[in-house]
Length: 189
Image 1 (cartoon, helix red, strand yellow):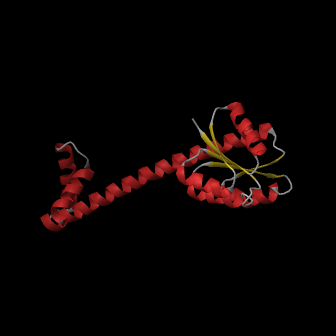
Image 2 (tube, rainbow, N blue to C red):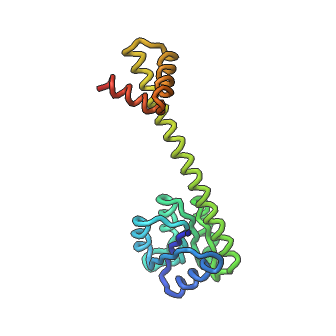
Image 3 (cartoon, one colour):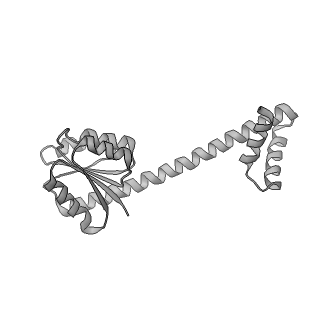
């Protein structure tokens, strides 16, 4: 189930946004009454979607939207008055924040909600791919260090060291990284 944080200074605004969000799908909704409260909640939990109803009691809301983009992969919708919507949209579009003007049109809000969740899913996919690539880089570094140790201490060539690590991994039914760690533990301590 997707989770949503609604940040709004007015109870009426919070209620209206919650109704719009739950009209098409059931989502777990949390509410914050100010930017400061929202920041505290973001430290404790991750949300799939964050809807900010500007202005907030302690700030306008654009600063909160920018902060959220820096610390989270959440989809973000900022709801603002129509007279400032274009200016705010230009300011926040490079951060990936969707700006919806008041009065809120149901179809526009639903479309913004779907776009925000889609962008969040895309960001999470890229983040997971980045983590996977980082793990592969770390594995290659460890294996390369182990090869250097074998070359230095056992006078192997790079090809022999590579083959040795691969053969040990196959014979012991373990990963090349584990073999490399064992080699490093043996020779570097």
